[in-house]
Length: 409
Image (cartoon, rainbow, N blue to C red; front, side, top):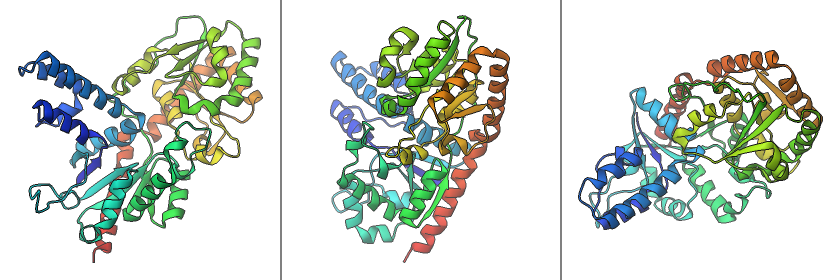
């Protein structure tokens, strides 16, 4: 198959490079921005121009460094290529015209075009307007999402991003798609009902060529409890904050919280004395940095509040399987996001008392903790190894191609 992932934002950066006089001819320019920057310095550009290129590459690195890009584009794309498929990253959807006859025809050049959370209103309107072109397209269109875009709770900082206009654009993309790919059963059920189309669960999975190192040995004398995430999870820490207060009272000086990426506001005051706050790193360095933090247990709280639970049910179980890749146990909220999987190497919690009891046992019983970590490692490798689950992406794309053929006039 020839597969194109629509990667938003690159065309703008390419235009800025062109103004400087630099037209990258090799995909590796974007894949390895640090090396590209070194090569540009060898081409005779002025110091000012090199500085501009560095800024542009820095922007690209930031965009590319999102977790969504990592789990839903980069890893599957690389493994699809390893399976013999031709994979490309495309920024804009184009077709030949009288003014630009040499433009590639995106929908006829590829067998599969993946819209990864595409939401731009202008693109949706343009595609809808040009219905004749769409009706004659060769490619299967796959809409890919890892979040419930139509149900972002107001407590989430990204809620304002999904205005009525943006959601209407997403609905237009969904209408144009032949199949959808998602991360979990909750998303599958929601979007199957919303669209009436086939929705395939392609779970986030561990690339063991990158996650080759288990958690480093903790020699601090305190159990290290790791949470990794962004400010979008503030609401998920309301219940955990109560458990943390109790844990500080019952197990003071026996554990250390490690917050990697951000400090959730409900525990910000407690974190000052009881947590190490670690800055986020480039996504390529993420697995190694997690290992270096030497966690003994990973946590993944999610809110069960009525106005937030539907969104959280549609989250992926990524924090559970990251713990498994590190060889440590996971303590998570008792929610379908996690509890659809067997509790092999994981403990599920509903109340603050549940959280306190689970973490207290992890602290008090090192043999139990290590045994749970080994079980979680085996569970994750058995169920969430990208070398195996990449086949689900292939099935989804193959079914999408069949749907596209049936839909052709």
